[in-house]
Image (tube, rainbow, N blue to C red; front, side):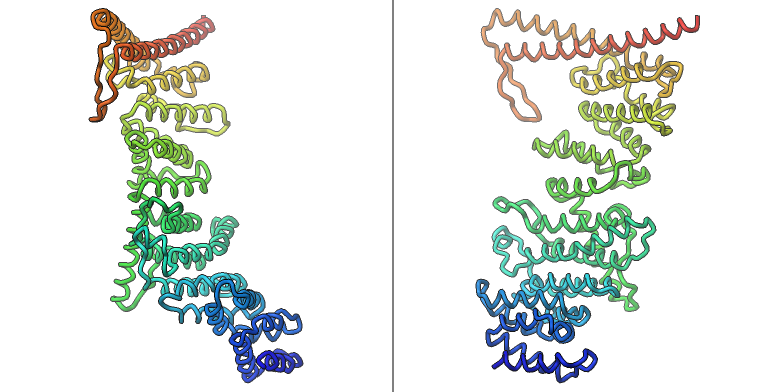
Length: 561
């Protein structure tokens, strides 16, 4: 009986020292163990392996059982108790066997798997393989790289599911397997993160390089040809999730920005054979193209899912302003503004605003200053400009209330920025209603500066440039308000007079080529009164600002007299 044969071998080996084990012992143990598995005695084999007295034997010989064990696991049905016993044996072997020997045994099984069993074999062995790799002290990075390369070699020949039906069926298990492999790498990613946190001059690059190679391979396969659009009826798209995970890894190991924006990273080996070198260069170019596509071209929702996750992992004020010299970097906020102002989908507009604020927060002070100047000049949208001006006010507040010396939001740099903020784009003829968000934000900023910054201190420089502000902003605003109010009051009077002659005049309006619901005279009057209310609000804040300026100037004159 197979169990009796195994027990006999075990008893003989128990009295031997570890160094006295012979090749014959290994062979007999493997044959007996294999027979136990094939004859259905997995439970008895598990007891032998769990027996503390057999610990040394299993450490040295257990890895020989991997091949028959994998065969039996696939032979038994999912609900079979024998299969469950086999899985427990696999787990025990991962805990007890010599890591180096078991590592080679596991890789051999992955290498031998092909076709329909490739993904199933990989997923079965990922957990024990991870356990073994984490035990390896020497050559951990090399062993991880070998494992990931072997896994990707087995997956790459498989067709990538593309249609909704193919993705849902996932016949070969590729979708599930790809995400399982990403989970497999996470302890090693965390190890790299911890090492980088311990030292900013982290020099042990081997583990990081292997993870980078893996990500680059994944970008070429399966992501380069995968269907990444959100598909109706699929709650969590496996390849979209996989793409997000790969980008997260690149971010965590601090390689995303160099790859996307600097593109100087070389991960190809230095081949002496030029043909091999050309193939590697082509593969790297494909991977980088896919990465750029994911970050900047793919569907907005995928971008909006990935990008905030990246930004949230970064400390505020940690991005250097020099990055804004790169075109791809400065394009990000400009593209976000386009979504905020042009996208018809409300939740995407809100999401883009959230990402824009995250993006601003991550830059150093000079970076924020540069961003604000750029967006004020390029957004062409009063609401966005008002939002940026509010951000400028927040930065000025930090500069005035903190002890740190911030040259970018005080003094001559701030004056240069205020020249873009405290003015009317078209002078007195500016459409005040259309620009009301910007105007209100500018007035609130000016009111804050007048209150917070004494003329004697003049940290912001606002008192130095007050004459220019009055000439370019306050006086034209007065004139514009008077003109606008007179125009709208006349329009209201005209509508009321027309209403007496026509009981229900209807006005049709077209916006962006789309005809809006018809407006009755009453509705038109409501709109006109709403505009007058906006003008009154602007005028009220303007009066308060001028009153504060007058009080401050008078106080200084009284002190000097």
